[in-house]
Length: 397
Image (tube, rainbow, N blue to C red):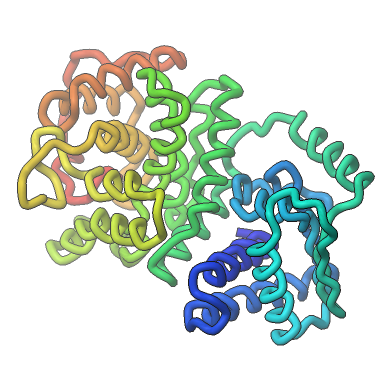
């Protein structure tokens, strides 16, 4: 995640905490510290920081921040007349806190689109409305950027890295960042390009979890669309798929990247990641309960096996079943430290072998049909030779 996005995410957390607890609460003080540090880093490379908020988008120095699409505070600030925030080098913590207390108070009192002047003018910090000519200029810039279709979702890897860093450091994540990534994936999928062209390659073993999470989200959203899921629900499925492996933030890299067979102790560590992921997601706030279920269930099999083992055996949620198939497909097509990538037909045959036991036959059929519509051969009933990898204690995802 870029420093200009880091700071705004932290700023939103301060404003949210102020609304919930007030300026004297320890949670607010902690959030304030968490915002001033990234601001200091940002000012080290940008002596004059300028943000604009227009049509729900965040613009930094005439450049739209794609990683902050759907950042909820962008609309709130613009509606209440704060379409711009400017911060200069020289701001100290006391002035920054004074600005935040003033801004939080005004946001609480001012109604959306209320017709009265409002601005904040401090020695190094300013906030207020944008001039009409600036609004039009930014809209022209925005239209110009949008006219060039984005070929892939590679730019979102930094945002997903940030989510895993947040999970590891704080035990929770920013919902705004996750939703900005899903928005970007939705835009790319609407371009109608061949599906396999959208899946990102893993260039280094240590970036596998990030890239894999993006690819599983792309596949799951495509599968949801193929089976007729209403458009309003497809993003929720993509969000759940994006976060399905979040618990691996707590899995040691030496275990994830181990080139040899996992020991029983290693395997016990790996099997914790669904529960760890569900806990992180639940702690991150309301609106993520569905993603928490998928994170918990994505290694539970269709007939009740797998892990974790719930007290009362059950089949996983239908979306968990969809994400599991997409998870296995992307994992097997990717080179890993303990094996090479599988040929595409071998993967499809293997998924068909698991149909009716570990995987839902209807989901396998729908997944094969989706790939066929994208020019990929539908998995057939034939058996592949040898299944040594299927007995490996390393989970597909």
